[in-house]
Image (cartoon, rainbow, N blue to C red; front, side):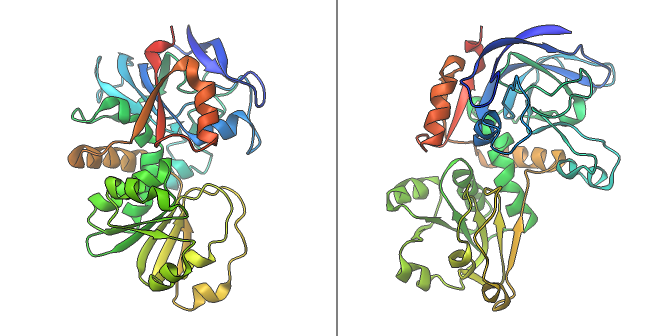
Length: 348
């Protein structure tokens, strides 16, 4: 094992501080990575605060990891020393159940091994994430990064990117479709970019008129202010697909009314109860509600390749590791456009 520096919450809801952690030695199927950038996800904040229950401390967040390969096991042929690679929300799964065989490791029947705060099959205790200098990961969960992309802005693609790309891809969004992206934040801004690149008529749906200019810069064809009852009525029954990125429980009924017959709204943000759904809003139009969780490794690589083809990255603000607690407070205040990325060389 080797000792590396990391930033961790040592107990619930405290500021992160520098500690030393241990990484396993590289095994036959492993890839060792020196971390250069790590994105800051709102999930990191929820986990530190134990908002979802089950957080174990010390907790090292970070599941949007970019770095360079420094060592490989004898069974690794896909990667070589010096390669630019990524690690997202998963670092392992059983690899044998039906979901895993179908490239849906995020739905592993035995439970995926998350990049942090999961059971560590190798060292015991819990997995420790990317707010650290180095990480060792099974080769099946390492991703190749297109060389043409701005590397510092790639990190959030490994969570925010795949979270929004996957539903658009799975529901076959294409040219000629009308797509609404509900909520303009870390997820929503990526949803706009992907929908636009897929050729769909893309509408940003937001409560804030002040976000209209940004939405159109990101690729939105139009902006719909959801508090404007007349505008909502005008768009009623016109959307093929809605990507709902609102991160908290809310009333989804007004959005359901925007869907066409057989239209679908997919939730990717609210991991908590929603307000009651009026059955009539679904029945009158054979409309569908669904959810989506990141994507499997194969689809995540497809997303990265799509980003390479269309030159898509996240809009980011760079920070140093020691600025993480201020960044957490700013995320909670919605004061970032649209994701923070940590310059990991600052952890020394």
